[in-house]
Length: 422
Ligand code: GLC
Image (cartoon, rainbow, N blue to C red; front, side, top):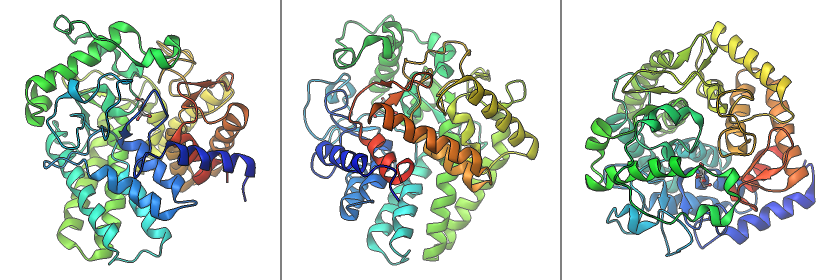
């Protein structure tokens, strides 16, 4: 039963208004193209009232997939001068134009959910096509983004993590040489308050990493081996492990034995490898630099994806729950992107404190699956209260509940419809 039918209508309207014909923009103005993991979550929202449109959203997303298997983080379906860096800055030479980096691989998990809700027919052609696309994308991660051979996932740009300017990346970014960046015009601060967005010197580093990729012709091997930013991201490592489990369920349903064996081996490797991210002092899984080996030591919302990925000993899980208790005691609304009091915490600034409902959703799903239903319910109720208090913002202050970033946000609307509003 819906918590608030009026908000259901508003949420549906946002998705319909942000629909550009087969794909949805995250919000008008600030993000005028198709974003990878946004589309996956948006499909869950559409699925609540228009299942055809839900499938179309992710089919359009994979229309931008590269031959090497990468699903890009942005597809520039049409021109829009209101965004930097646009298609000509990335210069990937693709049709449709895309960026040269990826984003969190949550698609297989969403695909499984859509398919199961429709009866789980192993012969469903739409599922089969998307299954192949997901498999190619996972293999791309396994081939290009596992430099330590331990089943974890490295990112070569902080934008790939989806937690764009989390303080987890600060030390690695500080080493990026920005001397060749030259002048450019940011567009984001024309849409939202600069106090919520990354600072200028941070943005210069993001652009410098992009330039490295462009200069080597988006050769993913060169970027992985020699790029200026190489972080093993706790978020993608957990999301990919989870997505491999979901893809395995699809492989088994179709009797695709060779792929099932391949995925089982990957899953076992990642399960063993995850300890490389465990930071006993922090009592959490933390992102870690692939080049220097340095752990961020920061407890972020992504640390709690361990439940969603199904990893952790009893001791590790107990420490994570203790961290959750501590965070809940310090804040009004779960789940902040960074724990209050941590280095660089700021309740209004992108990924340094604000709550993002899509991460909260995955964390709550994992907690519920692992038997922590009280915490799952708490996160879900807090998420609903944020929308009830402030509307469908991109993110929210964990202290005041005030919205931050863009308004009328697609994935926030989708999370209301598919999860916290129901
Ligand atoms: C920001 C977020 C990223 C998201 C994009 C579109 O860049 O950090 O995760 O995909 O906005 O919503």
